[in-house]
Amino acid sequence: MTVRTRFAPSPTGFLHVGGLRTALYAYLVAKQNGGKFVLRIEDTDQKRTVEGAIEGIIKSLAWAGIIPDEGPEIGENGEIFQVGDKGPYIQSQRLNIYAKYAQELLEKGHAYYCFCTSERLEDLRNYQQKNKLPSGYDRHCRELDQSEVKSKIDSGEAKVMRMKMPTEGETVFNDLIHGEVSFKNELIDDQVIVKADGFPTYHLAMVIDDHLMEITHVIRGEEWLSSTPKHIQLFKYFGWEVPKIAHLSLLLNADKSKLSKRQGDVAVEDYAKKGYLPQAMVNFVAFLGWNPGTEQELYSMDELIKAFSFEKINKSGAVFNLEKLDWYNQQYIRSLSFEDLVNVSLPSLIEAKLVDKNVDKVWLAKALSLEKDRIITLAQLPEALNFIFTLPEYDGQILVWKKSSFEEVKNILPRLVEYMNTISVQDWNKEKLQTMMGEWVGENSFANGIVLWPLRVALSGQQNSPGPFEIAEVLGKDESLKRLNTALSKLK
Image (cartoon, rainbow, N blue to C red; front, side, top):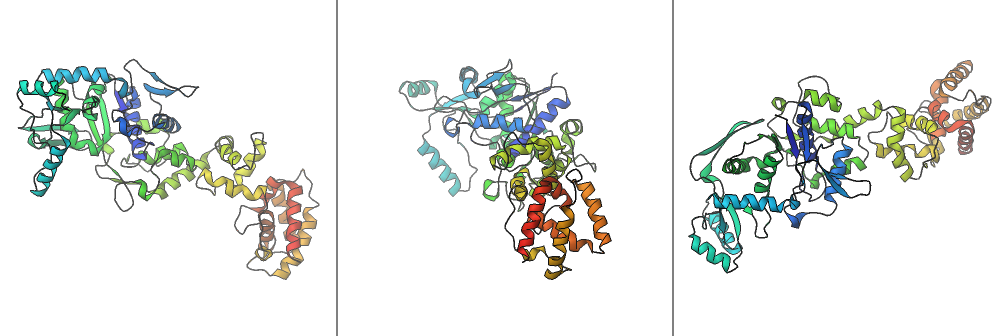
């Protein structure tokens, strides 16, 4: 048996971070077993479909390094095409398939037409609520005489198709995370499986597609747990094998409420725009509910593939801790080679109009190194590095070290400028600057702080900044001396 998993989002908007976790787990299971990972777009609810959402889902998965083996892809011209021999992988293109199997259920007596109006259903809900009865359809049309059914159809009455759930016994199944789960059949609705517009509902389309696409493992959110008996029953009605099923716990806000946009960003693309690295996001969501049981916290995709198991997934909800995501991102930024850091940073620096595409990348790598260990996200780089390109306005008072005085700085800074002017361009790098300046400070019996503090502030125009020698190397001799002379003018 070839393991085949799928991620089946609805194109109703952005890819939610919870969806990214579901896709990641499905991808890990497939790759761990040498199988296939399928992307399927479940767009049978046409009213909720958002233009561009399919493209957004595909791009977000690609950004995270989760590449489907089958399903929709985006071509060089921006058009969507599909890869794989079990398509179409977009449900709205499979309506004839669903119609065929819906008819089969009807003919076998496992489904029936329902003609109840929305008004009747609303009255039923109100009655059930008022009398504290279980909510759900009362099977009013389940046993209609076939002649009456035909008459209603011939007269053009609006109808939906419902599945016939057994009214006795239990549906029992083994969830890969929750273990054995059982539901009393009498409490389960006769679900609508074909809507009035002829489109199938999620329940019917999902079962048919999972079978025809030979899906072996269904991994989805626990909000679908109560619907699983309906799906199992449909598999049985068709005589098909039920895939293995795993239901993931909800993602929660810090206050343990369900993760929602009201309390912060939930779209994968939002985090990408904010400068989070895909490696950090993948590592972070992998640990939302899963724990390998080791001290290791940073995992490559290959390491996640080897380590992942359903046995180590928690049943309870996982808190989306933004501070932990920040930590992951900081670790991955620090681990980047300077070449990779330049490549991932360049787009935001160009957008901020700090550099253009022809910038000297060796020089840019040195500039980025100033802030590499200080930033949390790449989006912070333009603001953090702006002082390199434009000296900020600052009050001369911040040139004074806490253990010094204005007069002392006014006396020492001109001598410092005079000395630095004697250092050659060839020696103008952080190592030699540090050595030579150290010797000069020692020879003059100065405290380090009284020299290095005003030097750093003069070069950066900021109270908090990287070290002075690193800044001086990036600025070069001419710009460094120019900024030191600006500092002198502020001491007059």
